[in-house]
Length: 202
Image 1 (cartoon, rainbow, N blue to C red):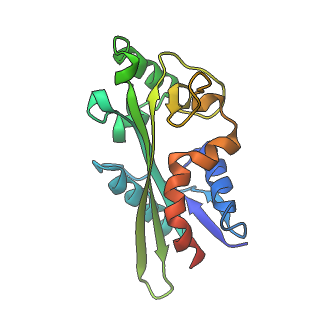
Image 2: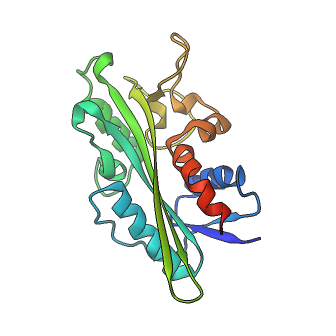
């Protein structure tokens, strides 16, 4: 089975990407990246995704996918954005990140808690002749932030993100969604939809 390396050490992301990839290319296996982490010094999601995908492709010799994603809160001018994983410090403590964001928004009313999950996926494909093809796609998932976490599913900011388009009075955070529901609607699946035709050509 051909493999694509996903430039992450996060097993949750590997599982999520495997499920998304399988919907279009069930013949591909997504494997985690086992090399050193590059310095993510980009100031946009696209820059950081390319940094990671290039490092994974060079280390493994395989086609590489990298996702740089985060939550962008309108009232915070788009922050945490590219700093979502480090919002409470470089320890990458997901609970601390979530709690800090909730604290910063504690006095903000519901109409002003709009936010988007953004995912930028880079695909880097090394060629046998030494050439490298690079592609970048983006997916945006609009919603708003709840005032308290709810649900044990997902990871990161999922327990406080309430996607748009749900029935009024029956809205749930992504933390309350099933994995299948999330994979069908998430920012990553939206970005991957644009990437599917590229993978079809691999």
